[in-house]
Image (cartoon, rainbow over all chains, first blue to last red; front, side, top):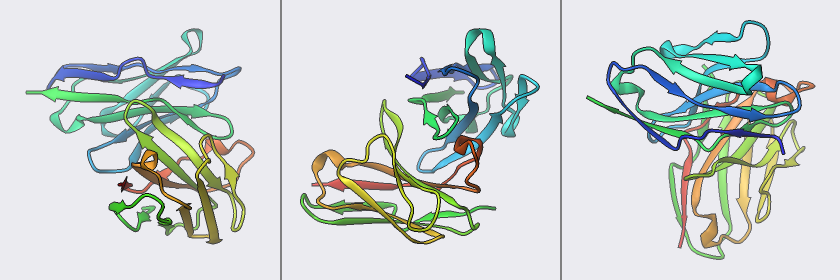
Length: 110
Length: 117
């Protein structure tokens, strides 16, 4: 079945440390891929997207993601995490309708 | 900026009640979506609409219906609310009905947290 998988339910990082959130997809061909962020009490906001072309995509708030076809992955990264990055992060993908992963909750400790 | 407004942030209803969740977008988007968000399950698509009076079932349509009488408004209806429908409901919209629907960025409302007692 076509799906998007986020293997990490919860991640804790120290402020200033680097971050990588994992996302794997299972589709016959490369789907359209997205990362969204949900701050507490809010809806989802798009961080970045990948449709084709350059496999390293830049997003808002200093985030980037790298598409790796060989690993069927689209991991989200940030070199230095800020306390305000504490939120839940969703990877999503698809061709017609979008399928969302189950989310990774990020905790940032001082 | 696109604004997607959900009429209620919190709702408390009783089992068996008919419940309406309303969503309005202000950017003339063609597509509108209703998702349900539960811990550990992510977002699951209930219904979506790509045009006025058009609707398509998502992954979990059972127990729900929708209405889109105007382009900017998309309503989710729980005909007879049950306790297992206690959840966070998110509405979203996207710009165009393209060959590949997923190629559109979705814009989300802040959500309605529904409790069914």
